[in-house]
Length: 236
Image (cartoon, rainbow, N blue to C red; front, side, top):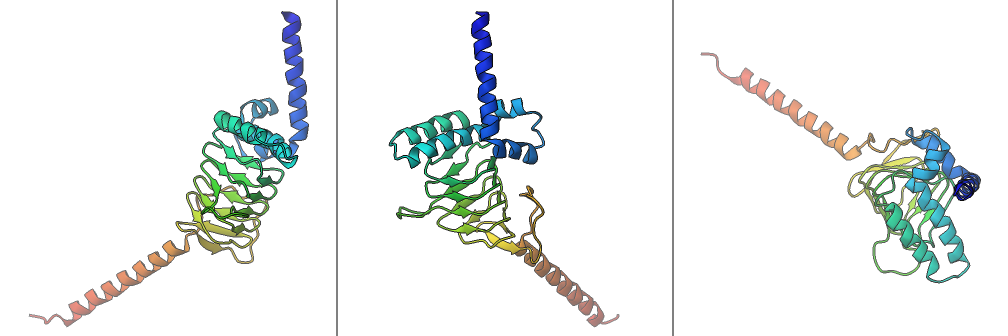
């Protein structure tokens, strides 16, 4: 009994070391982008986003080898365990961080660059039944907020941020933020993000800002009209 326990413990330690080395960029991303990450053991055992990526790397390698069924079966098991669905044919760069992961969907022809962050409920999907490239391409250091949908064969530029619940249907240039439904680009001119900005909620909304300015102008005009009426009222 004791020998069995020691063998299991030793196997888990070796397996943990292998995963720690093989997935160093992903493990590092967990500590850099999640303040709740406390230690390596906790990350390796409890971070479902990391577990999904481990399944994906294995399934993707088998898919590249032309092995049928097995890659999709592996990712189906991963979906049951983690709530995250990734097609094994998707191309994903190193350093991907999936926060929580529940409800994340990554389509077959999706291309993801390095050090990308996806929050829960993100969909990188297609818009129809067309063949070929039908899913989005994300550049490096992109952050996609909770519940956001990026649909179709579009490109999201490097260092861009997609706001929570945004629906993006068009290309996005580098160093941009996108908010709203449908997604509207709020370009941050001549300003590059330092590192990876994970704030996917407090983003500028150009449409809202214009509406607020318009409302302010209307209020000003109404006040002028009220003042004018008072001056025109005859004194008894």
